[in-house]
Length: 133
Image (tube, rainbow, N blue to C red; front, side):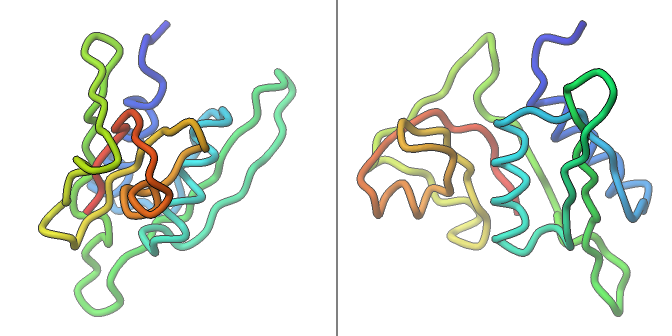
């Protein structure tokens, strides 16, 4: 039993990118679904599909995105920030800039999971889940 399902989710995406896979399967949870939607909205993944399984948990199929010319993955780095052993929080005014504004920080707030830009616009702080660039 692993203790950090979000780190497992990010590692599966990172490993599939490194291996050049087109699709990666991840066990589903509501938080993972929200992170997947953000990755899609920000253009880091091609598409996603939520599937039901026999055990009731469900699956997320994520189609990874690659550059057409160089075949490089669009996700250069995906890094877990807040861990179960060391939670990292940020207020609305102290939201980090990832790669000088070129990357995205995904934040879990009281108003749901969103990017650091959306959290700043809505003036809410929260737990920094991960950085993507």
